[in-house]
Amino acid sequence: MDHKKNIFSMYRVLLLAVALPLVAVLLGVTTASTKATSKEVKSLTKNYMLSIVEQCGSALDSALFEGEDDALSYNFLSAKANNYTVTDVDSSYLYIVDSHTAEMLYHPTKEKVGKPVENEAVKTLISQINAGKHPEPDIIEYNFNGTLKYAAYYVGINEKYIAVITADESDVLSGINNITKQSLIVYAVSLLFWIIIAMIAAKAICKPLAKIVNVITEFSKGNFTANVRIQSILKETNQLIDAATDLKQNMIRTIEQVNKSSGNLLQDTGLVNHEVAVCNDAAVSVN
Image (cartoon, rainbow, N blue to C red; front, side, top):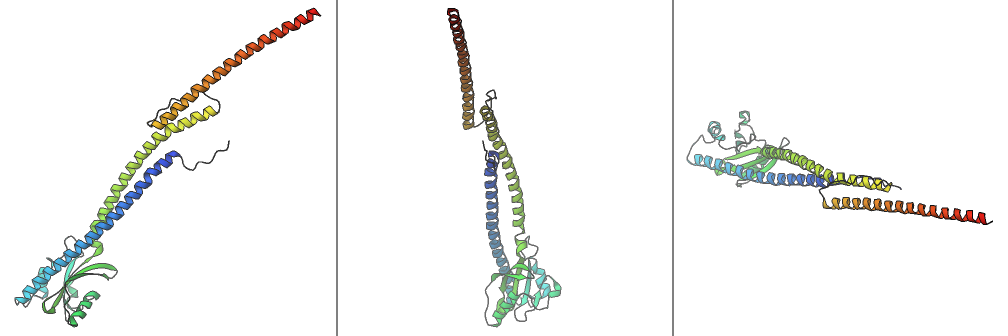
């Protein structure tokens, strides 16, 4: 009999049926949750930066309105700057630009103070101010030396200055990235656990079936002495075991009946042969 080549065993099919959906679900959940969380963190951080820069601008406006001549001096601004950064974001800092000269009034890197601003977005704001506009506080995204940054800005009273709070997006999302890595580790451990459970379950299902296959194979060879004492946790498998047991018993009874019939046939054949021999002897005597 020709046998088709088996590509997958039931054990592999069951294992893949459990493992592949788990992998797909875990990856899908991780990707979706990471995207949603990142989006929410970005929104919260931007709103927080905008709130901080508005607080900074209001404080400077009040100082200028009250006549503090040094309100835009480096020493005054450096003393206040640390109060206006995004907490736990190392790349976040405040800088102040003169709206008319485009020179740095304050920057955490002191060497940049007194030099022209390099940020194209701030230069655009200065152009708007020179055109007679007063841009409202807002937050923008821009690329600086290959790094994506957020910048919240506030144009001061009488357009005397522009306060800018900036932060790197990668730094803002670093917490999310760490959480994602930890989640992936947890998911990987969970996946490994469920694969082990699937392997145990698949083995419990397939091992009795393999034994039944071997028993039926022996039956097909005429060997009805094969042991059918097999145990399974599945109702359907137990029904198959019972059917194999009944088949064995029925075949044994059939063979016994055939043997018995064959014995009787031999006995009857012997009697017939004996009677034929008697008849032959009688015929010879008559002749």
